[in-house]
Image 1 (spheres, rainbow, N blue to C red):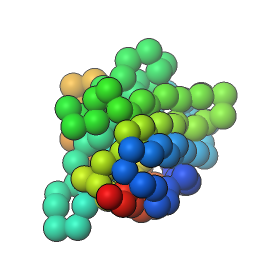
Image 2: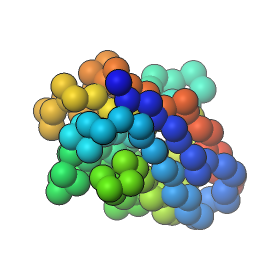
Image 3: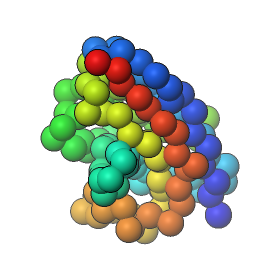
Image 4: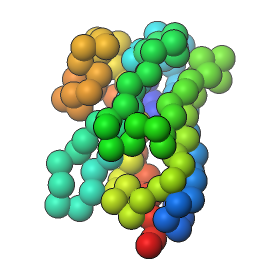
Length: 126
């Protein structure tokens, strides 16, 4: 069982930066692929970024590539999402997710994850 707690959301102006954190309980979290997803009002939940358990491989949605960076510190059981050059279109509820069954081939699919954070709002003003 893994419990995920997110922090770091908020309001920022376009072009600004935010860093999201996802802290996990559970000894085995360091062996889980972890992803970030977001959901804007009236839209489907979409993949943002994913990272393998070792942190050596990272994956991004095209819309955030070059602006967002996912990383993890397994000693702290924490995954981070650093967001730069934020656009108003990045406004959404952001979630972290983890699951031991997720692989590199499936990390973009939200239905593959059983463990989710509570979600935190990120609002980018124009």
